View: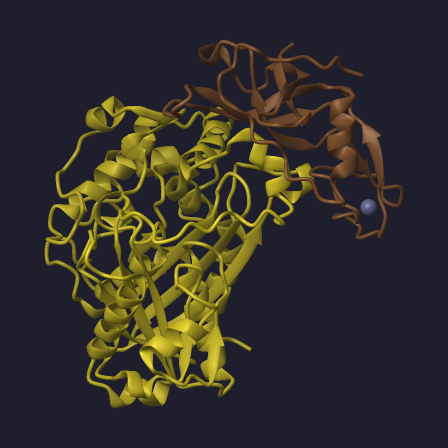
Length: 386
Length: 139
Ligand SMILES: [Zn+2]
């Protein structure tokens, strides 16, 4: 069954906070949900499907459903890390197409800038942890750096090329009043920032922000009854790529699998895409994803992103016009929801005028959850303005 | 078989492995200076990290094999901002094929390169344990 046209994104909201010492995590989820429902012209009472991932506190979707005071007929707490909201939009469309719900709420929120109320350790039963724990893979930069090192070795990708991705994001963030970092930076400034894990420098890394966001996915009949511009889901696909029992190939991501499936379902090609939201936990994440989605050949990503090619109004493929995770927001260390939200803004013509893409009728959003250097969940959405 | 050696000049305390019934033979072998991986008698494929079933042909049983301890660096990073000082993480491609997550120790971090030949060493783990973890140094 194709999902094309079976569901619409009718509401989207990005929480304006980037630092939330005075709010709880459930509160951030609820405020994000309230914003997305209001944007759609709906209320909590209309919600009959709820989708969340591991950033939602409590037991799967149950605790948040209780906190919201909703009684969903369909829940899904699929966890793929930061890409989860893109998976959730796809799963919501599937549930709507199957008649299991009509108004699906997807939330993401957290406050990683604050001291945690509790610490939950990595599951010691996780089979990979037994063989990775002693080596202090540690924070995400280290694992993404492994992928970057191999990409540089195989294809001659340079630090300067990766820096162009941060530069493009900063050009967009200057217009976003809520962006965590609003200063335009140069390639030289990125290269002068301190090395975190070779070859990734501080400015190759996304920001750490509190906050969240939410989207509402609805049945076509519901979408037609609302007053907002209609954003139709025309293609959706997910993929799981792992270390493959020792055969891991670090030169490509799960986008190489989810991308072609999403394009096939949508019946469009790369040339039809006017705007892309590309998961940008690190600069290398964007570079490899653009290759894997077919916007350039494998190994050509470095050259593709240079010279402002990702800057709206300057280059051929405007990306992350909110400033992305690299400059604007990466709430709860997860960039998936903000990728969807900015794609919706672009398709509605509601992005900042300085970065709005002209005639933006088809957009793509892609999420990379987990780790580019080990196991990852990849998800691609293709959306069309109707 | 490789000699069990301490790496005394490396400051980062190594977390002891979490040992399950399934992984116990691996970690016990480390204490005797052996690095084990799994081999599938049905399809002939080696794999790592080791597991009971074959992740390639789904045979229910696999067998332990001892690695030579020789390999090359497939990918690496030097973590520069750790509180205990810089350390190197890598995927090392074993001579037998599988790529494993590990650390590169007793080396000049700035001289590491992909494709470099490395050899097995064992690093004692921190705390009240006799566990050791397989790592690599320049060959
Ligand atoms: Zn097999």
